[in-house]
Image 1 (cartoon, rainbow, N blue to C red):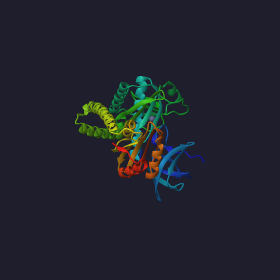
Image 2 (image 1 turned 90 degrees about the vertical axis):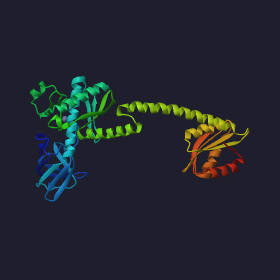
Image 3 (image 1 turned 60 degrees about the vertical axis):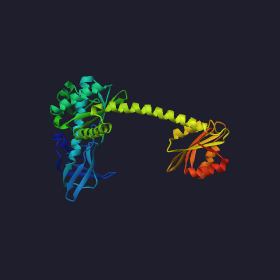
Image 4 (image 1 turned 30 degrees about the vertical axis):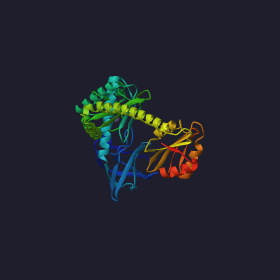
Length: 395
Ligand SMILES: [Zn+2]
């Protein structure tokens, strides 16, 4: 049986509710595919995600969570079946659709401007839940992106009419329009004066002013070209608000005016680098001072360092090894200890294995240096090491 569904969305892209008759229902792997005699639900296509919404029928309401076209038939994927021949009312999720139309129209404006100013083609387009991405066929720099962004927002404020038409083959031949591929059959052309002429089957705002604003939030090199991410309408506004809050917080923390934040961060990073260098130098001197305290001929030197990093206990251990045959340095925390055990003259792995066995630890390394962690406290480690070595120097 051949079903033909009238595409109300092409007659009026702002139509959010409609009446229809059920022509067919088929069970799908997930839900039921409902076929209507007419629909305002847009099926996924042209980079634009499908509509969602509800159908109201005599038995109650049915949720539509996907719409797609297969072999020329539009299937509304529903959570429940509806009787064939039944009269239904459809209502699409308008905020969802409107947001998609805003972003889709923004994509046309930006792609059209990039095409006319920089002679680059749109070679990829994705409308995700977070943002829209556009892939263009060449490189763009900061100032070019900024120029495109300003031009696109001007087109929005000029509130130009967005036109969709199905030109004849002769008209199409004379028309210069963007298209990702060679098209045949009936081609739908979407035009935005002074911005874009493009073959597209998706749905768009009626006028550019409905887009509100477009912001290119990021761009990067991608497959020899550039990938741009953009936001439009309330999503762009939400992004602005979130970033504004973040900047306010940074401004308050740094006690700097907004335009002075980068310089203030740079100053802190420079100071931090100097402090890190000073701390590192101080630690190295302290390690040498403590190594000098170890008696000549000591078999084992031990050190407990509150909350030290794995990197710091390794440096400490290597310094203490210069005076003792073996050095064991422990970083103490409420969870137990991290250890670094080292030796320049013997295999220190047996001591590490012994500690792991005695205190449920784990770790590994080379004969000259082993690092790991164990569930132990300084007192039990001191007792255990005393038993193992007879004596040790604690520094
Ligand atoms: Zn489009």
